[in-house]
Length: 201
Image (cartoon, rainbow, N blue to C red; front, top):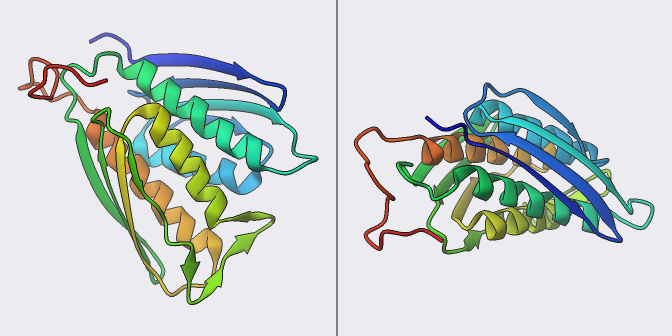
């Protein structure tokens, strides 16, 4: 099988980001975005998805985290799309549920070329969660950029009454890694592109 790897670089006046990806990896990571909680979530995503992932990002963090957070999502989505190529033989659909303490995250993905994101609920127990300047709005902006550039449908369900941001985000990123691993796997019975249209954009 052809190696499904990609290297993507994006440089703007606000950020300089390089992503190296091996879809058929073992979960090895080297991630430094300058946003600690995002680094940790992406390490969990790659570990449980068995993706080898390197992300090096420099951004205008002295202003805020918005540009870096969003642009990492853009480049990661582009890397997955590039590594998947024409998507021939992939399973296309994937789903996973992951618990952490009293939180359960369920993620369903369809690598369809059609973009849709059902976001993480912004408020839990009536309060917006935040940790070191990162919150659920930032997480959703990252996911939106990622899914838009991958070209996929991502539905997230979160059952939670836990007031801790980390405890809510961790099962989401673990479940997303597992669901995307399933969706990107090659089905030996599938001889072509998994769409009746014969193409996935």
